[in-house]
Structure formats: C-alpha cells, structure tokens
Length: 191
Image (tube, rainbow, N blue to C red; front, side, top):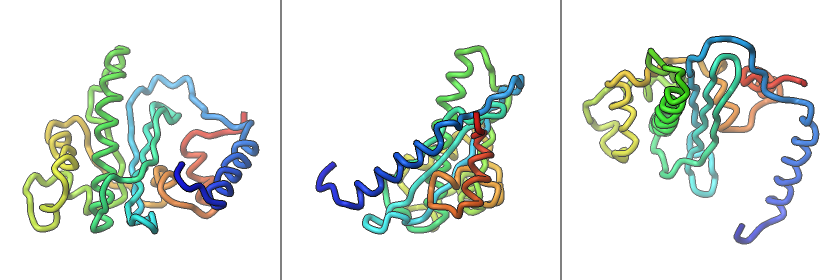
C-alpha cells in the first residue's frame, strides 16, 4: 500500500475486531436438491469520495447458501445510478456464465436462464434494449455484454425491491438492523 495512513490502520483494526466477533458464524447449506443458480447484484453511485467511482457487489446462491460473492470498485466513473447498476449487472452476469460452466462440468445442468435480481428498473431496461440511444451511447462497449447474454437466454434480469436486495451488503455501510437481516439472507448462522 502506498502512503498508509492512520485511517488505514483504523480500518484494518475494525476488520480484525469484526472477525474476532464472528468466529462462531458460518454459512449454512441445507441438504436441498435445488441446484438452481440465483444471482443478486447492486451498486452504489459514486461512493468513493476521492475518485467518484462506484462499487459493484454481487452474490450467488445455490440452494440455501451463498457460493460466490464480490465487492469491487468499478473500473470507470458512472454518470448515473442506472449506469452504475448496469455495470454491476454486467459484472454479475459474466460471473454467472462462468459459474454455469462450472456447474455443467460437475453435471449440475442449468436448464433455465440464471435469474439475476437487480433493484434498478432503468438498468434492467438498458440490459434488455439492444438499441443504442442517448442514455447509453457513452457506455463502454464491454458493459453491453449483458444484452447478448439476455438475448441468448443465458441470464434473465428481474426486479427486486431494494429492501430485499441482499447484494446491498457489499456496496455501502448499512444500519445495524438491515446489516443483520441481509447477513441472514446470505445464509450466515451461528455454528
């Protein structure tokens, strides 16, 4: 890390305290035969106060437990909430394709498109619309991969209200009550 500051040490100590306080927690996986891959994606908008870049977060569930998750700063500055969410949906969808291939290699075929839940209707609309127009003409081509995946029925993007969006936990600080609710939705339990 270049030029570490006291705030970085403070953040590291906070993480260590969190880990110490959650040593008895784990992810619960049931004996359920449901092997349908389901994704959840979210983004903040311009959350990094220095770079104004947004953070994408996603999680994938297989049955009752989470099997993959990510929280990552976006590579470019989004000009709107819809664009930030669109970039996050694309990131989530490319992970979904990789996971579908892994499951197929393990003979766990995904017979239907992978459902990805998003809480932004504008981003969902952009992902379904192959026509370029004023709202999306500036978006980097690589983020339009989602349109191809939707058209080929590899993934389907569905709306999910924000208060049910488990990926929210990966994009911004949350109030304690919501944090614990989303943590439970991830399958985290006391062991």
